[in-house]
Amino acid sequence: MMARIAGDPAFARHDLVDADPDAWAALLAARSDLAGIPHLPGWACAGHPFVVRRFHPGEPRDAVPLGLPLPPADGKRRIGLSLPPSVLTRRRSPSLAETRAAAPPAWRPILDALVRLSDESGVPCRPFGSLLWQALTGLPYLAPGSDLDLLWTLPADAAAGPLLDGLARIEEQAPMRLDGEVLLPDGSGLHWREWHVAPPDGSVLAKRIDGLAMQPVASLPSL
Image 1 (cartoon, rainbow, N blue to C red):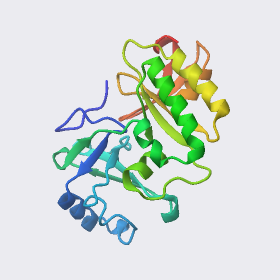
Image 2: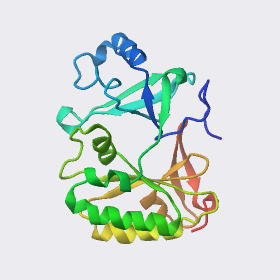
Image 3: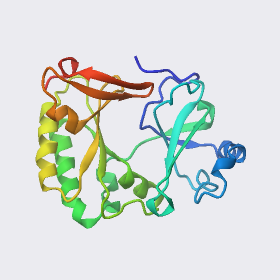
Image 4: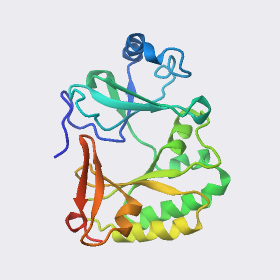
């Protein structure tokens, strides 16, 4: 079972949301620890989104837990906050193909191979992390040593094996590290590489909006 957020049970980890600018300004006024941090005052007015994150232990469930990562030049700080569902609007996350123009030229052949793999395996792929934030905000999130962080949404009737095997082959040719999660229908996120190398009788760490848990490989969709 996924944790439920009072007022809207449908928010999931990695969802992108827009915040009402007045609500964002009120939150900043109440958070003295965020005073003087670059980009924050105009964040919502500029149309920049927030991302739904995991609940911290003991955090109230009547608000949506959100995150906002800053660019590396501004300390690469991850800002944690929460806002009521009533001041948030869910935003469609761009596909990997839609963020291609924001990627370094050396990455683009790998992105093209990943898009083909997504089409062939029937598992939708979208970015998160530095590539996503640079594409959405225009701020300089990508650095020479950046990873490519991806999310694959596994359909209920799909096998993960072709996807995981394909990712391992593509990573061998990639100039960057491929990171990211395969999202199961229940909202759990499994690191693709950990799942790929896990033995049949082993377990994989599953990340959920309400916490972490070890998931037996035998209970996962067939490889």
